[in-house]
Image (cartoon, rainbow, N blue to C red):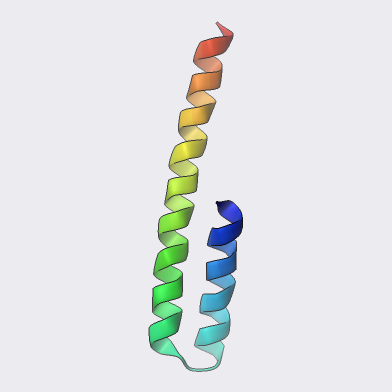
Length: 54
């Protein structure tokens, strides 16, 4: 999932460089959502692992 977030971020940067504002903002929004989903899942898995160890 982090791979997809980075990929959409790169697409947003490239689109912004070439002047495609709509595509850049959409790709940046998708990248942001995917990154936050990744962070939430990472924290959940980290907590589950710590709880299961004890």
